Image (cartoon, rainbow, N blue to C red; front, side):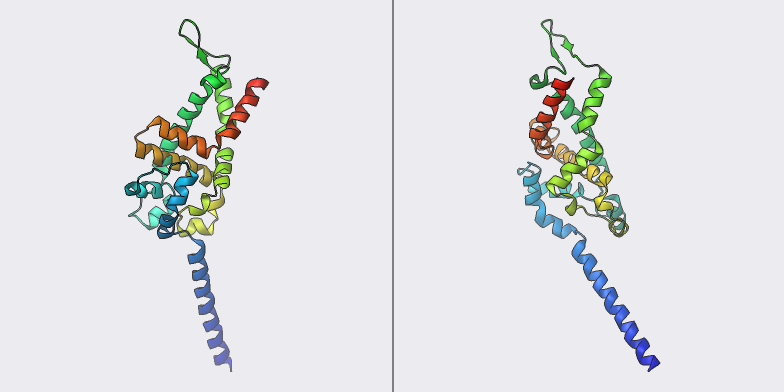
Length: 212
């Protein structure tokens, strides 16, 4: 009887392990699954004309280092994050200096650039919107974190739902678009406007102008 109980217990352990593996397969996003979602992702980020032959670049923006370490054939998204961060800085500064928000900066009659704000104030205004929490919130609104490709350890530690991970993803997507379009500003502006939900940004900046 004791031997039979032990045998049954071992069989239950094997079955439980199999169920656990199946659950992981259902929860974890795979490259194959991500490929099927690319058309929808392109719509969400405002870049439906992202060339299909460069889909691997867009896929790379969703790949974390932990996955790349387990699958060396795939590059991770850290360099794309760096590029995207630079694009966001350039885009937002240009926005602050646009005619719509001339209070932040404009040319005077002698063709000199002037602003009612100093460098520190402009930096603070930019950081109030372009920061980790806000970028992560936009990723949540667009429901893009579900497409992240992570290694097993990161999945087990719920890295997908961390603010820093979502911030990195936002920047990496922008970086992928920049790398594809060779920094074509109209294309980058379109994607930034879409992902940043610019109606909200414009209202936000208008309030800041009035307050400051």
